[in-house]
Amino acid sequence: MDNGKKLIVFYSLGGNTRFIAEEIKKEENADLLELKLKKDIKSKGFLKYLIGGRQAITDKKPELLPYDVNLDDYETIFIGSPIWASHFSPAVNTFLSENAILNKNIALFCCHAGGGEGKAFKHYKERLKGNRFIGEIEIKDPLKAKTESVNKLKNWLKNI
Ligand SMILES: Cc1cc2nc3c(=O)[nH]c(=O)nc-3n(C[C@H](O)[C@H](O)[C@H](O)COP(=O)(O)O)c2cc1C
Image (cartoon, rainbow, N blue to C red; front, top):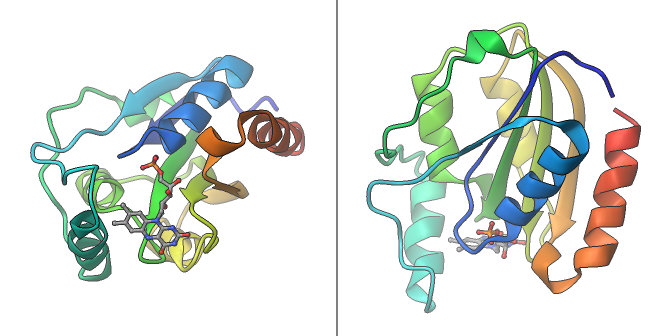
């Protein structure tokens, strides 16, 4: 794949999406931007599903810690998120609201626990009109099957 200078933007609560983001970085020589929330939900316990899931469904845009990126520098942006209640995560929602993204090559990746990408890819496409979608991939909890996940990822990268 040669789609100009590349950025990977992602959020990860439990490390799965971070793992994939870092693998993409290795393969594509891209810059990495990890979105962090000012106040993240707790990563342990069952309550996180209720709290995080509700945030995702109700279109919440929680405050991010400051980040420094100039999107004008990039032609291609990978956007990665865990799936929360069939949506992309609130942190990514905040990022998309804070940045006008236009005329980019967009590649989407998400991690889930077996439910697939849900509505996330559809919602990204609605939110990111005016861009070119060059690929999308969903990966089931990659930290539980690293080799298989990395192989799937590499195949995908070859084809975009
Ligand atoms: C709040 C919350 C909601 C979730 N909702 C879903 C879901 O709808 N479908 C699914 O397959 N997995 C769901 N999961 C599981 C995560 O998407 C999955 O474990 C993912 O790999 C986590 O990525 P991370 O480690 O980068 O945070 C949910 C997890 C959380 C914390």
